[in-house]
Length: 72
Image (cartoon, rainbow, N blue to C red; front, side, top):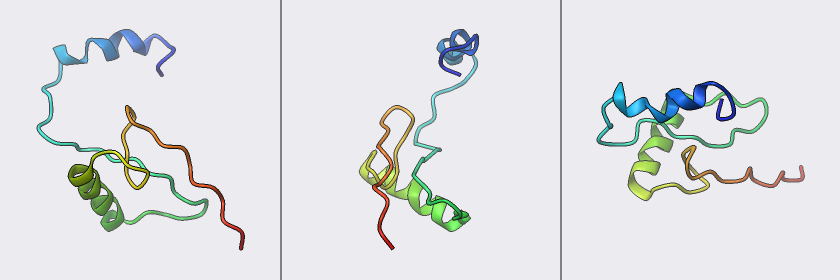
């Protein structure tokens, strides 16, 4: 998306969208096979709003590497 024809539209997004007053999207690494619940998503978003981007919840602008796999 960032290296395609979409780039020009992304740069102009301020022409079509108002800036949100708070974060509305949180990203986090999910282990293979795990399906996050709505409650988990809300908790991650709340964490991001309170603490800013961390490895627990982050944004496209402030990404974190995936956690190291744990031995079982």
